[in-house]
Length: 294
Image (tube, rainbow, N blue to C red):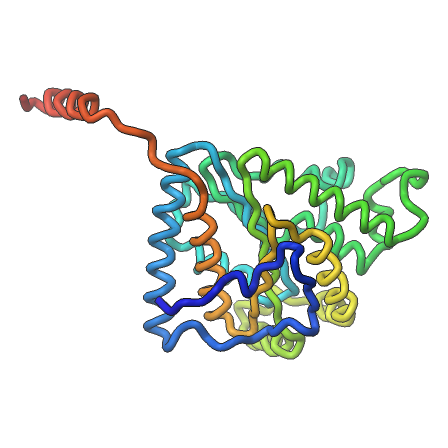
C-alpha cells in the first residue's frame, strides 16, 4: 500500500484553512485501477476488523460527517468506502431541508435523533453544519426556525459565532462520552462540479437529481466557499478535526477517506472482551451434546 500522511488533510485548529489556497487535486496515491481496488479492499478489511473490536468492546461509537457542494462525491464515497462494514453496525442518516416538525425544535434537535449507539459507526450525509452554511448564505430562512426575535443578535456575525460555539460544545460533549467525530469536507473546484452536473443531465437515470433550483444555488458559489472557510476554521478542534479532501479525482478522494477512517478506527483504545477458555470448551461440549455427540 502506497504510503501517505493523512495529517496533510487534517485541520484541528493549529493551521488556518483557506478555500482558495487548498488544492482540489493532488498526485494520485494509486498507480492504476487494479492497485486502487487492492488498496480499498485491504482498507475495507482493516476497517471491518477495527469496527468489530469497537462493537465487541461496547464503549466507543463513531460519527462520520460528510459536507460538500453538490456532485462533490458524497454518495459515491459513502458507498465505496463503507462497502466492507457490517450493515448491522452501521447507521446512515441523510439530511435535507428541515421538515415542519424539525422547525418546532432547536436547530440541533433532529441530529440528536440520528446519532449512533456505542459500537456502531454513524454517517451523516450533510449535517448540522448546514445550519451555518446554507443558512448563512440564505439568512432569510432563519425566520422559518421560529426563534424569538428578542433572542436573535442584531449582528449576523454574532449569530454565526454563537452557532459555531454551540456546535463545538455539542461535539465536545459527544467526544467526552466516547463518540469521536470525523468530519470530511470534499473540496472540488467549480469547473469540475459543472462537468459532473452536465454528466448527470446527459444520463436519463440521473436527470432527476438536478433541478433549476440547484443551478440557481451555484450562483452563490463564492458565498458558500467563504462560509465553508469560516466554518472549518471556527469548528476544527484536536478532538474532532476536519479533513479537507481534494475531490476532483473521485478515486483518490475515496482512497484518502478510507485511509483516514481506518487510521481513526484502529487508534481507538478498544479490544475484544477477555475469554474464558474453560467456559468456551464447556459450551462446545454442550453444543455437541445437543447435536447427539459426546
